[in-house]
Length: 117
Image (cartoon, rainbow, N blue to C red; front, side):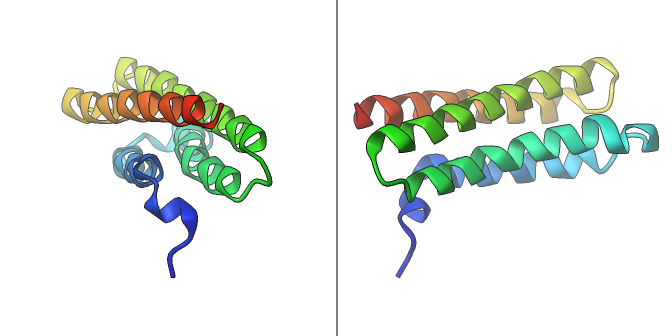
């Protein structure tokens, strides 16, 4: 029997996002390993993790709180993507794909939050 969060498309997309940033971040230079590499991975993972934790919340208000945190982590991924692009650590097509995924997740989180109100 699947957990509640497994049915959420926004969670599925957030897991995909984590994979999308993990692979290119493997190519970041060694001096970025404890900086941007860990930051973008942590932020991407936190999007899905906060959706999971929120989905088990005792109330819609609490779930909405965790979705807000997931939203902020999603925006942190976007900021990290811009930094990686400017340095340049990632290719344009990798940036665009992850950026688009972040946009979709943002819309989905906001829609889910509205549905809980």
